[in-house]
Structures are given as C-alpha cells and as structure tokens.
Length: 193
Image (cartoon, rainbow, N blue to C red; front, side, top):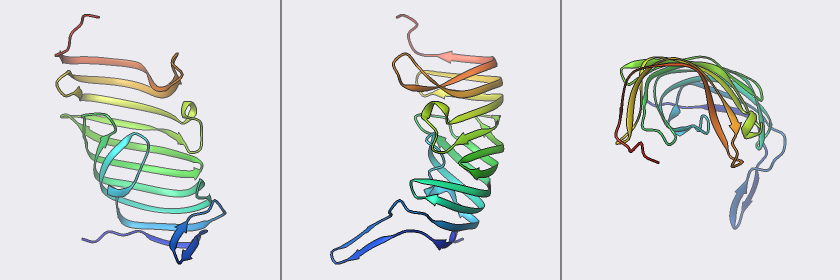
C-alpha cells in the first residue's frame, strides 16, 4: 500500500524561479508532521542507522529552525528491519516507542531480534549536543549474535550501558560498560600484534 507523511504549517523557503533555485533558510518554522503509516526507508534516524525499512506512526510538532529543530510528540515503529552503519548485523522485527521533547529524544522501549536472539534498548539522544554528550543507552542482550563477516561471531547475553567518550586521538567513540556473557565465539583473525 501507499505510505505517506502529512505536513502542515509554516516553514521558511527562498525560491527563485529563473534560474530555478531554492534554499531552506535558517529562520523560525512551525510544522505539524503526521504519519499514520509512514515508511522508515528514507529517514535518517540517527548517525548509527544505515538502512531502515518498516512502519512508522508519528505525530510531531516541529519548531525552531531547520538547522536547530525542536520536536514535541511521539513516534512508534513496528515490524522494522534496521542495519546499523559499519556493521554486518541486521536487526529484525524492530518495535520502538519514542518520545520527543524539544531537543531530547527518548527511546522509551525498543526491542528486536538479532541473530536468533533478542536485544532491547532504552535511553536518550540529545539533538544539537556535542558528539561526546549526545546519547546514553541501556542495552540488554539475550542470546544475540554480534559478528563481522570473515573475522568473528559471538553469541552473547548481558546488559550494557553505552555512551560516547573522547579517546586519546581526539575522536569520539562509543564506550560500553556492563556485564556480558559469551555463550560461544569464533575468531578467524590473527591474535599476533
């Protein structure tokens, strides 16, 4: 079936008809976005999601400016398939309840199937925050498989917290802490340094 988003309200737009050009200037906007059965395929959910397919139901008020939007409302994801950036794993049967309050996005609950096991997550993502302060997640794994094709695969269970940290090289990386039980692992790389 056809999926669509309904958008109403006001937003800045500079339009030149000849030669044709358009620009979205950084001025105030006030939009209502309604998606009864929206499609995740063209959404950039977070910097970690490479591909997403599934159904999105959302009702959001978007204010602020195009470069610094503020969001109010809720969204729910059902039956989605998600492939994270730079990972081989594919999350299937993703379900999530998400709340938006200004620049704070709260994942109230998210669950998915992963490699014959399950993963659940909850936490926050702050829009417009520095990369080293943008998120805090709690992740629970039950018999889930983490893998990198041709290098390793591991079936794991446990609970982790994930947040960004600045490394000695100045780059920001995810930092995980918690307890993880490895049921089985295979490694095809070299252990020599």
